[in-house]
Amino acid sequence: MIGMLIAFAGAAMPIQEGADVFIGTVELDGTTLILRRCDLAENRYALVDAPGGHALDALRKAKLPAYGEVIGRYVEGKDGGSILQVDHVEKLTPGKNCHLSDALGG
Image (cartoon, rainbow, N blue to C red):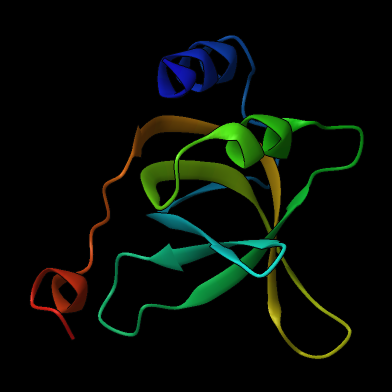
């Protein structure tokens, strides 16, 4: 249900200039929402709301991990870490992920 609401809200919002689609698994690391990309390196990005946005409110209520498409912009953190400023999330599927290592128990 939450995934459908996120997808519906995202469909009503245009992608802002400079935004891109990042596909992966949204997870909670302590109190920080993280996107672990669906690539061989499994790049990790801390998720923050885009200026003026509230996209993470629904993610905090979702069953995690969850597979989805995060629409936002990459910024480098002060500590050199990777951050995504999230405009919205689409196609969120709670309880799923896209990582072969997890499927194999690794």
